[in-house]
Length: 99
Image 1 (cartoon, rainbow, N blue to C red):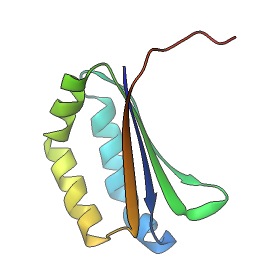
Image 2 (tube, one colour; image 1 turned 90 degrees about the vertical axis):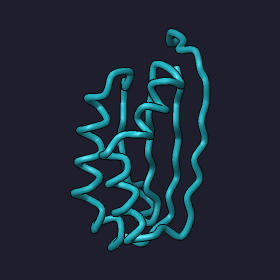
Image 3 (cartoon, rainbow, N blue to C red; image 1 turned 30 degrees about the vertical axis):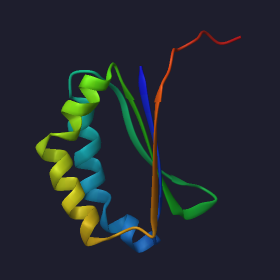
């Protein structure tokens, strides 16, 4: 499994301006083959922090996602509301059972 963890620092008003694009991105991404989860969240204790958590079956599924039209549209929208910073980390993981 591939897990993507992104942390975006922005202004609350810019995050609010992205809300419709975020909704579209979540819905479309979750329908993609190989996507197990695709979720945006704003930190409760810091409204300037937007997080994206993704789970993909494979690198190939993630690469296909990066080439979708909804990804291109989302990148255009976020470009109109550029964040102060963005850190994206990719992990290859094995799921384990809880202790």
